[in-house]
Image (cartoon, rainbow, N blue to C red):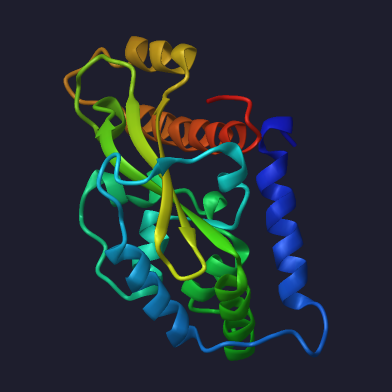
Length: 215
């Protein structure tokens, strides 16, 4: 296990254990989560409308913008910013994953709803800009970059802070991908390599932000 990804995994294991333990675990209706998610979507802040998040703000159950849309029952746009590969499930709290997975039992959904609604705050990782031509199958030899915001929300679903940051493909991985892109079309293996790398870079960067190791 990578040391850089250990904190999200510990959080996931802890929340998953909380959902599964005890016969008297709290329960809430999943429909309440859908309404809460819609409030959060409506509260998405304009740039500089809220204070800048600090590391402590990001130490909370999190979810991607794609998952927030799923929880709200809203359609997911057919756009790179909302693609599954750049909204990795590893950034979703287990309670959020349980609510969007069709195989979750009704009891599991109610307990997951209680976990999510009971959190003092939530963090949403929103992709605002995707400039990753090779990862999108476009032959433009440049290192991929994704513009992100971490948005903190209070218990009422109102945005309280936001943190703008950029995630880039690993330099060596990008150079290797460019070396392999010597044909008219981009090799699907190169596309997948860069997508996987961007998702991993995002997961690592999020942990660094939450632990204060990057500003």
